[in-house]
Each structure stands twice: as structure tokens, then as C-alpha cells.
Image 1 (cartoon, one colour):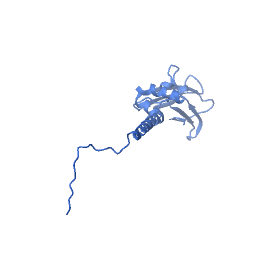
Image 2 (tube, helix red, strand yellow):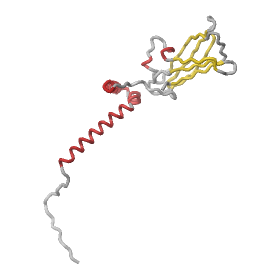
Image 3 (cartoon, one colour):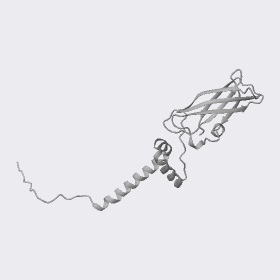
Image 4 (spheres, helix red, strand yellow):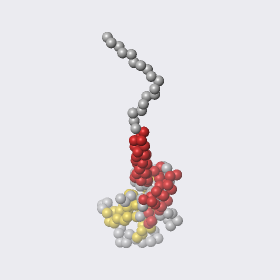
Length: 178
């Protein structure tokens, strides 16, 4: 069996990679990471602003450049009608008073929802339907842009003319338009 001796040298090992070829790759990867972060911030701007309110001004500035906005989040599963009542107005003929209480169960501010009121007859058939926008049910001093604060309730009181309708029941629902 032949064994050959391997000579040990004190020379450092040579790098086989080319130094100059790596900097374009590093620059390209850095640019791609920055673009990925910017794109993620754009697509998740509503959620980011809700969960991290401190960065909302930065997101608004970002959107001014891009021509977008940062609206309040809309989640119908986290806001609900806690109670509601529809009663005839004793002082005015053909008028009813709607009282409702909305509750935001989210840990962040939500946009005000749109309400849908359906007046029903004795057989629970719809007599009339009305869409009630936040600007219709909010008091004059309440701004729609502020939204419903986290874990907060909003009381709604509306007076409506039912004309010649004689509603026996009603259905009140909330939703966010598409």
C-alpha cells in the first residue's frame, strides 16, 4: 500500500469567489427587501394603522405620495347592536323613535357602520326599508372620521316619519358597504 505524505504549508487558503461579483447581488437583495416592506405596508396599511397607531402618520404620509388613504378598519364581526327599540312617538302622529346602542368589541377604533332598518307588517313582511348612514345617526358634534373607539358604545336616537305605514315590527342590521 502506497502512502503519500501531504505537505503542510503555512500559506492561507485562497478564496475562490470573486469579490466584485457579490456587491451587485447584495445591493439587489437590499433593494428587493425594501420594496417588499414598502409593498406590505401599502397592502396592510389599514391593519397596521389600527394595531400600531404610532405609525399611522407615517402611513398617511406614504399614502399622500402614492395617492391612497388610510381609512379606519371595517369589521362587522367586532361591532354589534347591543339593544334597539322602535316606538311610536306619542306627541307626533305617523312618527316613530328608534333608539339603538352600538358596541365596538375590538381593541382598536372601527369605522361607523351603515344601518339598515326594515319596517314589517303583522305577517313580518317588509313594508319599507331605509338605509341609515353614519352622517344620519351621529350627533352634529360627532365626527364620522373619528370612528367608534375601542370597547366603546355609541347611542343612536332617530325620529322618523312613517307616513301612512303602520309597522308592527322592525329589523335593524348593520353592515359596511363594499
